[in-house]
Image (cartoon, rainbow, N blue to C red; front, side, top):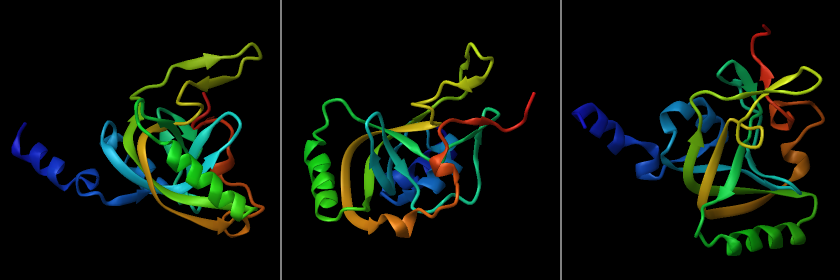
Length: 173
């Protein structure tokens, strides 16, 4: 490793534990790929997904490989990590504070792809194969600093990329 690479490794936010928000992570995704990071956002668990959303919509769209991606990161517990106590803590907070969301800091390794395989559906629409329709995923091992925030303070009636179901083409062919 050369001196520049060593310097970048030493000043990396993941090395010193600086916590990024979801928008900062998406804006710097290429340089953070494969690194251990600390990310703060809305920890959402649904029937079929676990995601980390930004507290507020990102100012700039996450555009990768010609697609505009939702402002979310897929979450997967790292194999062998004991995360059940964190899931229980999150669940207990929401039971005590209905109609709220949980802001949390999750720690783990960020994954993304350099290029995405494109699936073509029978109706002719195309979609990149990301991580549960998202551009990145965090293999998390820890959660901390959980607080509840009223849902109404975070989500407005307007549409934003946090609620996009799938990526859309940045440039139509």
